[in-house]
Structure formats: structure tokens, C-alpha cells
Image (cartoon, rainbow over all chains, first blue to last red; front, side, top):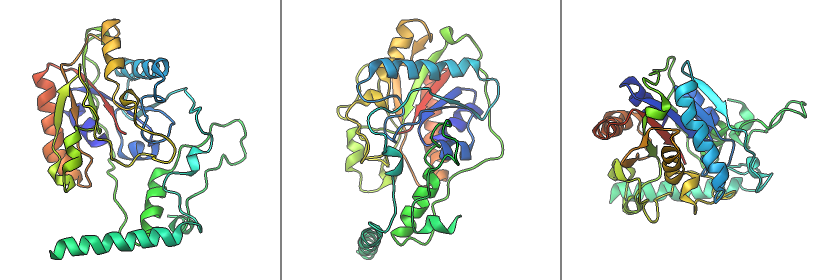
Length: 118
Length: 178
């Protein structure tokens, strides 16, 4: 998505990214970024919260007009209210699931190898 | 790379500042650690650049025609055997796909994507057009495939999105990544 934003901007369109993976977007480098610190999947607001979603969309489009230089990140002020422990969960790796992940990877590689030789 | 991240998820700490907001989740480190734990030897390479293009808005926001680009797609993307079979797709901003294709790398343990407005804000942007915050909302929104290949995104997808935006007289774009 960051690559598309950069391409559009290079060709004369102003862009703003709405996203939740701050490190990935900032590592790429984009003109305008509204960081919404929520679990991946809901960068435009908590599900069914129309008031929050309208506010986030409004904040995003206003960045189109107010940002003066590229690589600008604005942090949305909203808090994820549904589960305080969500930050630890995504792609978690620990002693509890290490063997299972290795098994999943082995099975995936076997499928890919079989597909290649078919 | 911290050697610890090869075998376990990196810690999320505030380094002792109780008033600081929680640090953003380190998705790059988490992803590297996750795939290494699955036995993959080669890390995914994220795109990075030293400079950034910048196009200031050429007119007032209230005069600007805005489009939406999202990584969510049409339902038929789910039938694709490989990522390469997915191509840029456009739909009317007045009628979202039912359902969207959303089988991407989002946090399936912590949330859900049953509300399309939480990742593809068609109604919210339409509302901003109706209230005069933006000049207008484009006729179509655009779905861009998530790919491993940066080259394919830049060679095929981005030019196609640009062409479709220009055809709709769009001047600014909101992009949302699931």
C-alpha cells in the first residue's frame, strides 16, 4: 500500500495512508500517514463505531491539506477499548507454540514442494 | 536483529515511563520471528526509501475529489489459486462488495472484519463529501492486491490505480491497509 501511495504522489496525486502497522509504513517512507493504534484489520475505527470511524476519516482527509512535508505521521487519539491484551498476540512466538509453528512450516513446505513437482 | 527475536516475540515495554503511551507493535520483528519459528531461512524484505515524493494539495480540501484505495478486495479474489491471479479491481462507491475479500494478514485473534467501514470507509467518506469537508467522493473505489513482489506492485498495480483515478478526475487518495 505504501508503494502505491508513493507512486500516486510521484504522479501528482496527494495521498494519505490510514494504517496500524506503524513500523512498516514508516520504514517505507510515505508522504502522509495517520497511525491508528489498533489491531491489524480495523485501521478506520473499531467495528460498528460510526462516530469513531467518521472522526478518523475526517482526520485523515484533513492531513491532505495540513501536512507541509513528507514522512509526516499523525497519531489518531482513539484508544482500542475491546481488549487491553491485544498487543501481545499478533504473530506471537514462545515456548508454548514453537513446536506447533515448526510443524506448520514443515507441512507448508511439503505442500509447496508437492505443488512444484506436480 | 536481536537474537532473542529469532526464538520468541520481542518484548513490548515502555522502558519505565508509566505515562507514555504503549509502544507500537513491532510488526516487522514479529513477522521475522514468526516465519523463522516456522523454519523459513529467508526473511521477508520490506520496501524502504531514503526520500519521499510529495504533492501538496493544489486546491482547497472542500474542492478536492477524493478516492479510496484499499487492500480489501472483491469476493472472487478468494478463488484465486495464487496471489498473481489477483488484479486491481474497482467497484462503485455506492455499493460495497458483499462480502469483501479480507483473507489477509490481519489480527484474527484480537478482532474481526465483519464491519467493512472499519477498513474500507465508503460511508464515512461519502459523509465527508455530503457535509462539504471534501469536494466529492469518486465514483469508484479501488482494490489493490497485497503481493510479495514490490516490482509487480509498481509495474502493474500502481499505474493501473493511477489511470483509474485520473479517469475519475480524482485529485487526492485515501489508502487503507487491512
